[in-house]
Length: 230
Image 1 (spheres, rainbow, N blue to C red):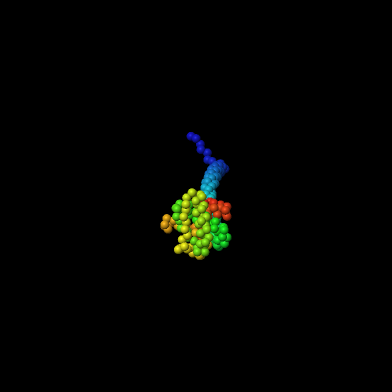
Image 2: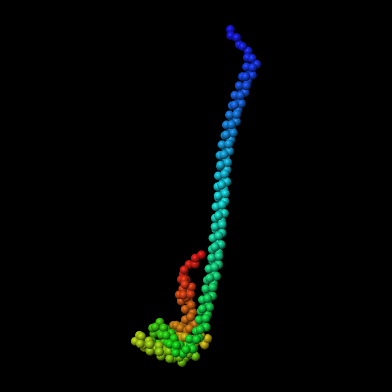
């Protein structure tokens, strides 16, 4: 029969201390493990939130940047169009004034009788070459009848020399041109069915229409079809 010796109070106390120390150590280790796990999860969540917020800020910045760029482009385009319209308006005013001044000077051409006779001859010949007919009529202002008759003789003579064909041109005194015109003639052919308006006013109008691109190049140094760049 074995004997169980009762533990003394000191022994019991020591055992309790050991057990308490062990439990405390386990508790501390577990608490430290939980603390580390919490710190790790916090860092992960924090990083995730930072990335989300950064992405949101970047997206908002990109949106505002695009809006600002679009607004800037619209403003630039609007200003460019306004400038272009002002330039075009100023150019058109200049061209209008140019042809208005030219119109005022048309009457001066008829003042130099010799030069005017040569101009009338060429206008009659131009009509004759275009019509290519043997008989033509010419209409003119009453004030120009005498000088037109001389121009007709000159035109007939030159036509004969240039083409070896006879040309009969008569002055139609039954239907004079208006005295409000600056000069020139109307050449009539095919029995009165076709006429070529070679009055000064009509020639200036044609010049304004047909020669405008060349005039633009001469005045502004650019082709009319050239695009306007911002």
